[in-house]
Length: 303
Image (cartoon, rainbow, N blue to C red; front, side, top):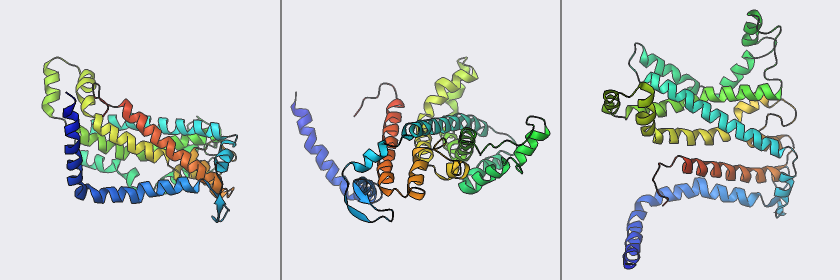
């Protein structure tokens, strides 16, 4: 009874060796652009570096002790969780609705689909700067409009305080993330056979029931791809937060990514920034692993 697995092991090994010439270039590429930089980053975090990047020798765990000694680190980690979860969830919900709309036939659909791509095609810094000027308390068109219709008595500094600026940054991040997510989900919708929805309609299922029990399970791979890429992009996003919250004193609107930038640019603490980079890498890896576990189809066994 135990000979079958033992016999299959050499066969698997031979199959892997035969596949190596084909997957070898991909493995080399992964090692060059992922494994080596990650290993070098971890090594750097254990070195004593000057503000100019000069290596003065090993530092042991001193950089990590200095990192965890930052009093604001806990709140920054909390901001990071809120930032990633809020942007990704809102983006997925809005994109799913928009993709459902764009999947229908209507006059001008091609033009609407092209218009959806505009926020994705534009520079993130440019888009964020436009929002920053729109919300300027003195000359911003959005503030002037709110004053004219009586919502505000005078211009409000949406980007001048940590809380409102952070919320504005979430809105801008959702705005620039929707195009990619929408098209990914739309591609998933268009791969679903029309007969599936028709069968549900014949069986008496309503529109919501058809979407929940027939369409949504088929969209799982597309949503998974969109969510993972969004998690990585949003977690590592610097331009949006830097433009909107970079001038605000303190750490009230910082994530671990913007804190890394501040440690390098303002404090010139390359040692601590290197340790924080390793923490960022570990956090994003854990988040993706947990997400992949959560979206595993029911009944699928771990391999």
